[in-house]
Amino acid sequence: MKRVILFLVMGLLSWQNPVMAQQTKEQRMTELEKKLVGLSAFVPGLKQRVQVGLSGASIQELLRAVAQSNQLNINVDPMLNIKVSSNVTNENALNILIFLAKNYDLDINVIGSIITVASYNPPVVKPKYIPKEIPVNYNAGANTLSMELNNDTLDLVVRKVSRLSGKNIVVPASLNGKLVSGFYNEALLETALEKLAFGNGIKLVKTSDQVFVFQPLAEGRNCTSIAMGKLR
Picture 1 (tube, one colour):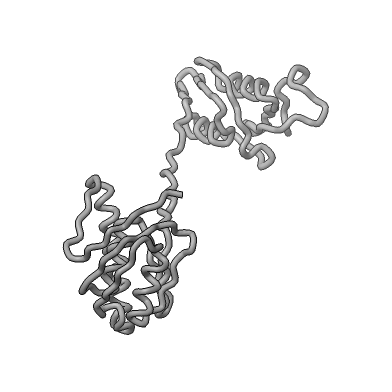
Picture 2 (picture 1 turned 90 degrees about the vertical axis):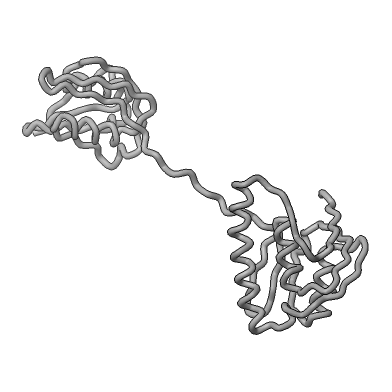
């Protein structure tokens, strides 16, 4: 693991980061500082000055020395592998913690009076879900349907066809999540739906009240022997 040498000369703390990264980090550091300032009202050792001289020590040893000097409860993740060469004079423990967190991407959690220092793991941000546009066009005058489908979800395809055409089309729960593909250009709506079923291993039936229903094939059946059926 990478070994980091820390030269701590407390006073003016400066660092350089890209603007966007700095803004994000600044917001996090502001929250950490507020948390520690609030704790310092009950834990006066955070505001007490520290005199620490260590060379080649680990961050665990540095913060242990700070904790002992100022009577603080500081727990440091043993997995942190940061080597420290420090000369801290006339600076309080709160600023030392913030300095370390800023420069080495550390996180500081507080439970009661216990301060835990660990590596910062940014939260995973899930990308915003953008529904896929289903390529379906309906010509009302000619009652024709054009579709260019490639692993599209059947229920979403049917929802759009039904909305555009005004036809009642049913997808049963057993076909939820069924992926379909196919290309149909200006085909009569009923024909396009029948071919969609045929090409994707399902069947289409039509009720007496003009409702189209997609259905899974019966076990052992195949598309080549099935035309569109009717339900009464």
